[in-house]
Image (cartoon, rainbow, N blue to C red; front, side, top):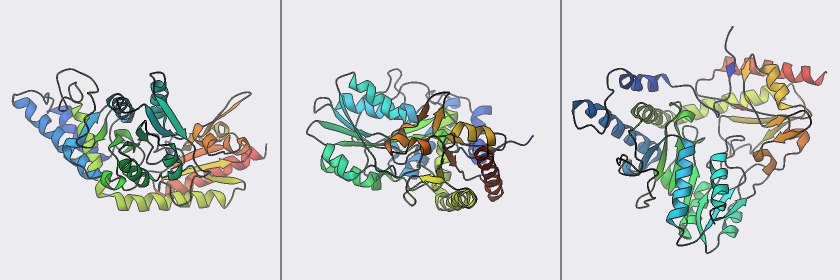
Length: 380
């Protein structure tokens, strides 16, 4: 049986063949520890530094500002917790938004138990944070602002450059979770005016279990963990050479092919949207029409349940739900809730996310499958 068409690239991505090729020697022959002083440590050590330069080039920073982590969740945890501790002498107030990934929201909730105060900002009906709301929330005790670059559910792109400029003017540290934006839209730390930025390898066609935290010089958060002093003393533990090499190559490819991939994904995303809405009534687009990731399509099908739609299409199309429907309750995602999506719409929300490997034939097949499934469910 053929595999279902994969339209869940915001969940995770397959490995790029070039990434696999770059990693292969470190599976097979170059197994040495980068910290070793002998011959076997030379190639792994050089490979880690090459990857550091590749990531730095992709986001326009210095290689020394790149800290390798185990993934986006660790990067977010380290950024927020370390800044909170580092700047506690100045204040205890953190600003974030209601649409953040749990790897930010849960960290902020934890810090509230440690004496910090968190302001969780609303969004407008398209899922975008208002810069004016950020400015109004800033007070004398504000030490950190953490707003994602682009939302994983709706693709809504946030005004990070404006917020970053505001933070810089107020001498407040700015962090953004860029797990969904790297490789999909330009992600330049200088233009975004952020001091900290998180990347997740498995969102950019690299392996799971590897990520990056960009830390702008001269900011020096305390070490994530203590030990033998790897990563310039910022994160102890023998480096994940295979993952680091993969992420470095993936970032190089993402930067090299960005314009081509953006155009390809946007064309297919819009083709999918037009194809479904041409044949199905009562379909709502969640998120802004323009300020949205080129690969992300969140659709609400009025009166239906997302779980049922996914069951109907599951053998042919892999996508994700924006709501979990149980026997007597409906749990709409916190993102859709923040946007004020009514339950009759929200409970039928499906996210389709396209990748650089998606083909036009797959999109046309997905349109036919989704249209047939919705029509079948509504006829019952």
